[in-house]
Length: 333
Image 1 (spheres, rainbow, N blue to C red):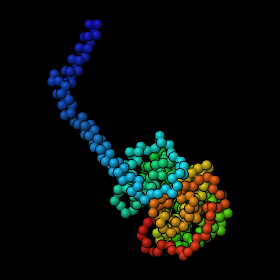
Image 2: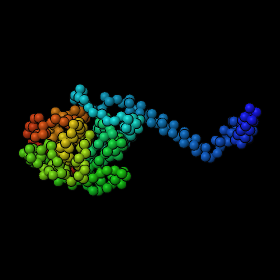
Image 3: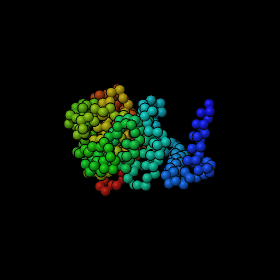
Image 4: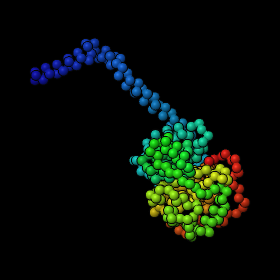
């Protein structure tokens, strides 16, 4: 027993003499703080708490806005929507902070805030998932980050755009496509697709071997076998008669979505207020599948069990004059 007591006494005395120098605990703590190394740790800790406080303010501002302040609507609240794996999703605090930062960015090239939040809402529900995005732009790193743990693939309309995006976002999975359509040709393209609805432009097919002019079939082969959960159509450009337009992207998204066995695929179409996007969506994604959106964004939910010989239950030929965008139009992309 005496040996044990002696050991404790020696240990305590050694510690006190070494760290405190006989001046007590407060003197020791002051010496530690005065050391440069510990000051750096103190600054790091204070910086962390400052960041946490700022993040909390951002989240409170986001929550204060509420869903009702954005023009996002759901046409059928009773529809049962699939959800992603909650355990693998990006933490909600990080998700909200990324979205808030992107929405507050001061650039004319970004989506309207309500559109961005509507897309993010779908990704939040499905992530981590297989996300296919037609278009490369300001939101590219945001969509990729929000789908943390999933696979996000981007389709651009030029090698330059894809190369630039890859340079800014290392590891980005993006591919360029040479679209062979133009906005000016849209009425002819849609009329041909109607005539070939049971042939080359049928709704269920292997796009790799399709001769339909609206089929995007020069992507890497393995992408056509992916079971996509969400497809966002935000490209290519469609703001002038000579630009490619999005009829081909919408047709391809519709075929890809219908090729998913036993699935529910969310298809989002941006710039839905423009005629090409609205008419093409009505032709291939169908009004009966429209579940929500904003004035500039349409949200379609394509389910299994749809007819394989036609896109919509009621394929009516579009009537009325065609009004493509005029040269020099700058709204949208």
